Amino acid sequence: ERGWEWKFDPHLFSRAVHTLSAELADLKPRIALLRGEESDIVPPDVAEYMYELLGRTAPFVSIPESHHHVFVDQPLPFVAAVRALLRDWEHSIPWVPPERR
Image (cartoon, rainbow, N blue to C red; front, top):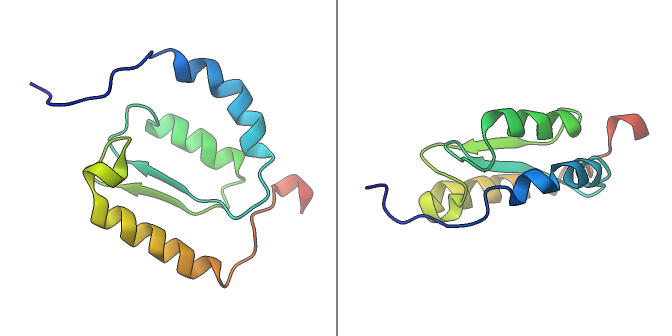
C-alpha cells in the first residue's frame, strides 16, 4: 500500500515541457528551484535540465524525504529553505539569463 496519492493525467506535463522551457529561459525576477528529492514529477534529470536553462546560477534545493508536494511531506525543511532564500534575496540581484549579461 503506497498510501494516499494524487491522480492525474500522466501526459499532462510532457505536453507542457516545450512551452515551459521557453518561459523558464525568459524569466527575469529572482528565482530558485525547490524540489522534493523523491519527486516523480521533477526527477533528477528534469531538475538538472531546469538548472541548466537557468545558467546554473539560480539557487537549487532538493528537500530530502519528500515527493512533489514538499510542503506536505516536509513542511519544516520547506519553510526553512524558503526563509533562507528570502533572507539571501535581500542582498542579491535578480537572476538574469547568461546570454543577457
